[in-house]
Amino acid sequence: MNKIETPQDRYQDSVWNSQYFSNQKSRPEQGVLTKLLQGGDPLPWSRANETVPVSIIEEPTPAEIKQRLKENKDETHWDENQYSAGSLNKWGLVYFYLSAISKVVCTMVSPFFAVYITVFPFLYESVTLSELIDIVLVYILFILLPSALIWGYFEASGRGYLPMPWFMKAVKHFTFSRSTGRVIRYKNNKELYSHPFSEFDCYLVSSPSHQGILSYQLHLVHRYHRYSDSIPLHTFSSSQQPDEFERIWNLIQRYMDTSQPMPDVPELEPAREKDPTTAAWDAKNNRKPDYWFSMDDDEFEEALLELQAEQRFMPNQGPEIDLFNGGTKA
Image 1 (cartoon, rainbow, N blue to C red):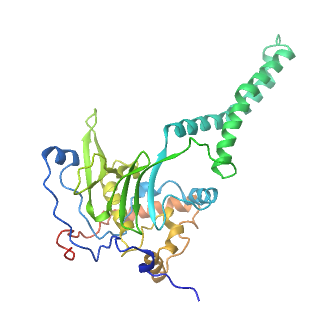
Image 2: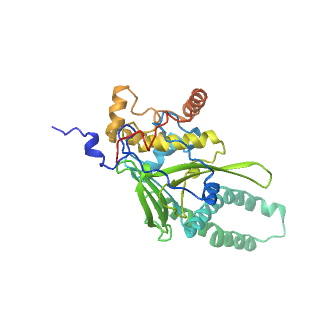
Image 3: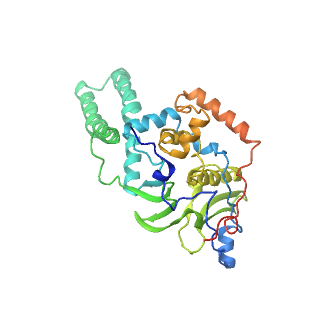
């Protein structure tokens, strides 16, 4: 008989639980400069509701997520255990853009060149056959062939058929671990600091642009240390709406809170059955296991519009909790 996994089997004792938590130490007094940089008071902690930022689930679509999982052999940056944020290093970015240009050469420029070289003798009757052959050979040897090799290797390595180039090393920025309750910040792929999620505060910072338009950033800051590197949560979305940033903070709290199911977003659909709290909630509420993944692109677009309409009448965050007096004594 298979053993039924319980939350106690999956989660460590250090996880964040919005129903049972130890009171946090008071916030230390901050200087004027620190307050200015952090934008004043932090966003409130809450028992997160079901609101999600639509701007972060618009792309990739469920079809794109399924294809990416297939190509990466089910490896993902976000699952029932952790969310990991990272990016390519500078040489990886150069190779990525070079591959994109090579793809354009192979799929768009080359067909156009083939058509052009076919009518070329009719446009320039003085061109000899040997000159025409020279032009074709130069294009193939110095443009098409290098482009095909670059793009072909990029596609093959991305699908796992060839080893990834050594310079395509990812740079890890930060990790949220649901299964341990810890937040880890990295610098140059080395751990910079690691603390329990409940020791962080979230700040929504605004600043005017040269045109006088306010731009916003969202930062997670450790409450008891003055690290120079915060965790940039605004990278979750390209939106500049304050409401969306509040929903991002709500989504992160929901993901880290093991007393609640994970946020209902497409990227977490394959992980829902592996998380005991989420699996129990889904079974109780008869949620379709493939709710998102069963949608085609048109159905997904319609679902997003319905979600946006519903959330207009919902608070951006759940009911507030008092981290310092609302739990048990530490």
